[in-house]
Image (cartoon, rainbow, N blue to C red; front, side, top):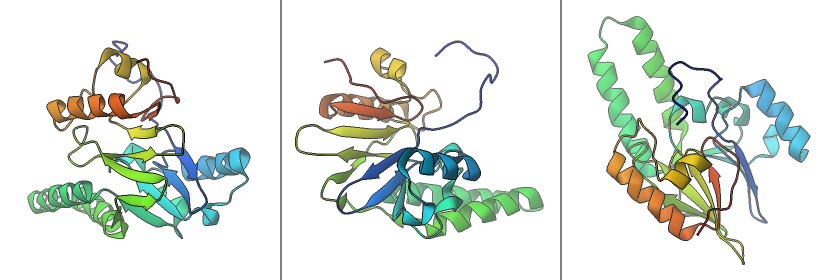
Length: 205
């Protein structure tokens, strides 16, 4: 977006805390474990063991760097993303014979994947799964639906406010056409957007 040819900052995804009368949920625990634990307490007074569920909008590593912090929580991800990642990892393992470092990494990834459960269509009455494929094969957002507005926790379906305003999708999308459709759907339904790599914003109509 800014024509940067080399990395100039650490890669982080937006981590979101969602709470209603039914559940305390973390979306995309991106920060390193120690930093995330401290910020969680500073911002909310919560301990990691008080988080009941974690939702990953995608399996990309930057979106789950601090996942281990929530070992007592239920780990959730869209079923289509689980299916696509499992197929990719199995293919990678088959191609990595004689490459111990790759096999070790694939084994670690598969262990995380096996812990993940397919997210239901409704995590709670006010937290709904909203498939937004394209950025990755089965990526999904969450729609938060309190009485007077709809909030989209968008993951990589909306990278930043600038991407949204320019109608641009992730330049390494699995399927750019589907990513564009997902971006447009979120633009139609969301009153507030929490993008995957930026601060919350109100979209212009």
